[in-house]
Length: 172
Image (cartoon, rainbow, N blue to C red; front, side, top):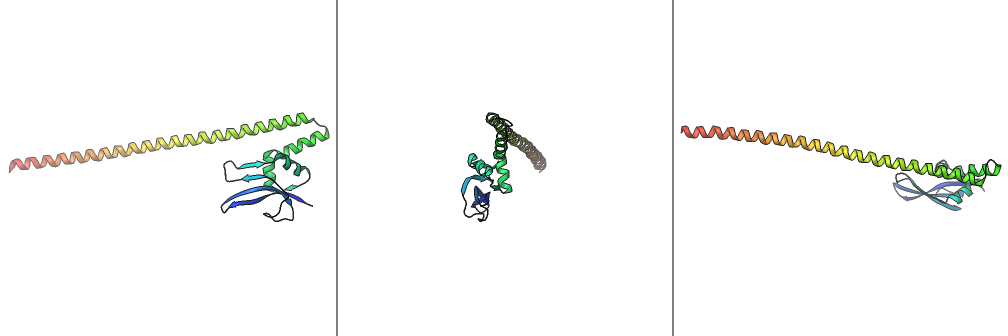
């Protein structure tokens, strides 16, 4: 039986959420499946993935063929790296401890990179808010200046009108 690892759509219209499943290749996309391996939510930033790592690794090692999207998700989660490392252990290139050390180092680097991206986005958001505030302050100052000029012009016009009326009354 040919097995595939693929995404099974769920969620509402315009807000898709997927289950990562191992299914018979002949089964329809949202039909019967053998085992649920995890979930994938592309609507969050960054997209969130919950994966049963050991079961996904088992299915990949037993020959299940993932779809393109499922392969990308599994690769990002490190399933293919672990498969590669276990292959090296089987061939005698290195031992199990070295494979675990390499995988842990990769995982730490991935976490650090994700943190750096989040910090960069937060910093950019903060800078954008500060720029927006500065622009708003400048605009408010310009508006206040125009209002002050209009009030001053109105006051001088009123003073001139009052000055014209008082000499006319004294002549009469």
